[in-house]
Image (tube, rainbow, N blue to C red):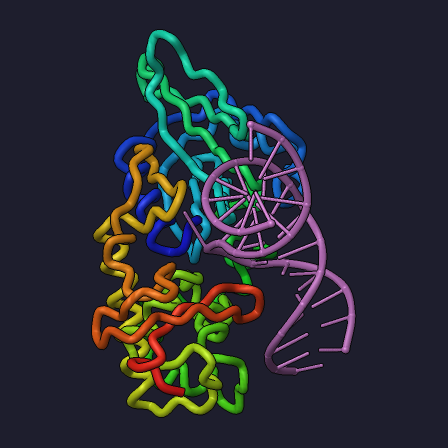
Length: 282
DNA sequence: CTGAAGACCTGCCTGC
DNA sequence: TGCAGGCAGGTCTTCA
């Protein structure tokens, strides 16, 4: 499910609710998701007040006032949804793995934050907020696509002598974070670059266009609230509307909006890529 | 070292 | 209608 725009959308939809809430309890309903859940997760989160919600790459972080951060990765099918308590309470659904009970400062208003993930590719863990950037998974993360460093020269340097196809290269978190399968295809289409092009062969002008295209596509997707292909919802349980703007992704054998050629689907490293053979030349 | 493939899971769609 | 097979938004690990 979630690439950078989807995670950013969830962050924005949650932050208006949960900052300031205290975690009164955290309940796990299984021992592991993608990895084993740490046994002190509940104890660490309990009684912490949420002072900030952030996104790093595709990770969502809740900073607590007890100097710990809860770290969520939603994998392919994860959701993090906020529910206000109603009279009936919340009936746990089949794939709800973690339920966080919340209370506002007056302790009168109660709410829940629910982590759901059918495929269980997601992860949830915690660490000291001060150690975040040394932490096992986050320390390998490269720059954000919205950062100033993300420009054509940076990519030129990263791609030096690389034969890796450009599609795989822009999805590599050690180069730039947050570009997943949908937006990689879309960005390459917007740049007119063929997904199989060896990354090292791109000229500086093409890289400039690629950088611009990635940023444009991601911004548009965030504005549309992300892309819902099947089951993505934000923290308010609402879908995203970027699907209607997709130019190539999931459009195998349909007409290109630019030139009417048939969009082609291609498997690259086990992932589907879509491109227009007319607009995107090798 | 690099790049590709496999692994982790469940659900849904397609085609026989 | 029922079942097998393939595919899915991510990413870490293993293999060639």
